[in-house]
Length: 167
Image (cartoon, rainbow, N blue to C red; front, side):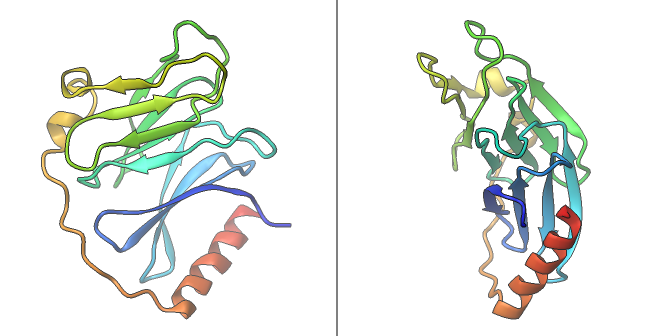
């Protein structure tokens, strides 16, 4: 039996693939699509098998990975090192034990959106000023998106290695 996938995102540079699964290992993975190799693990966000799905995103500049979590937080990692850059702890102050199920970063401006599927909770929008302490000052211009042709054999290789890793 395979591991359910919550979300998949292509890095703005076009060569890397971010995979967010609901595995026991509880990590997001960045895979190099050309080399079919695991590049970076992002740990901390909770999204266990059988639970509600949490989403992820990559900043337009490609420097940061974001993910919601069952622990009520939203995690931010440095894309290249995998180190936690920032943690939004309990952004929904009116609700404890809620899951941050959705995260999105605006493609051209510094806006981060967090949401929960729990009833009655607002959608939170962090503006550039609110993001200053976490990411926006280091993420000025989006990377140029390069078009990379991925062959079926390359993708099969990625899936096989990912399957071995998640078992």
